Amino acid sequence: MAHPKHKTSKARRDKRRSHHHATIATLATCSNCGATVKYHTVCGECGYYRGKLAIEKNVTV
Image (cartoon, rainbow, N blue to C red; front, side):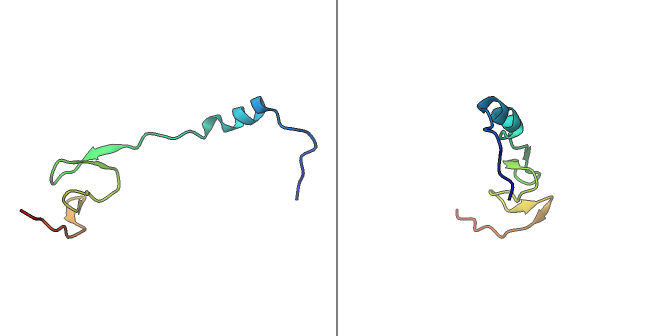
């Protein structure tokens, strides 16, 4: 395994890590119920994904 010959400074380390930040998730509205959902995920409210029923949800009235 490779071993570093010199200490990596905090500035150099932090410059390398400058792109490792979290990004905001892209949100969309469900075409079935209108709830806000993350892209490419099943709607948690109604269970639909891209206009088709993906998960059977128990509806209690």
